[in-house]
Image (cartoon, rainbow, N blue to C red; front, side, top):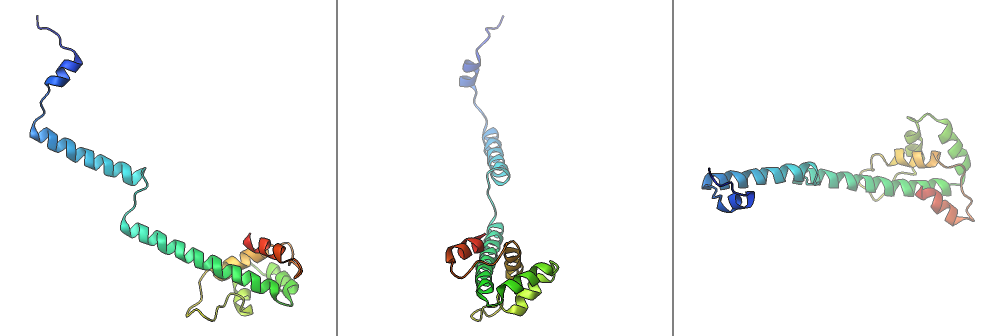
Length: 144
């Protein structure tokens, strides 16, 4: 009867072939890449660039929308304009903002798309126009 060897003894005596080493390394590389791209958060260069471009656009929209809200609130007829904005349908609100010129920045060659919509959303969310004597309230309302 042959002597039964323990798992540790068999492990010590095992000598893989060069082909086994090659395929083990290749499989490890592929498995690492699959796990990295699915669960590890890895992205390709193109995906990273598109994510950065989207973040840049969102930041520009948010900046111009904040300026727009500040200009809107500072206008002399802000209360009437806010009521007209709230009475307008959602698809007309950005046109009212554009017509008022609150989202237009003279220094930009082309206007930021989406800023008027974001400005209108922020303005409609306001309960009332803050008074000029309360600049802290205006900043808090503008920030969201």
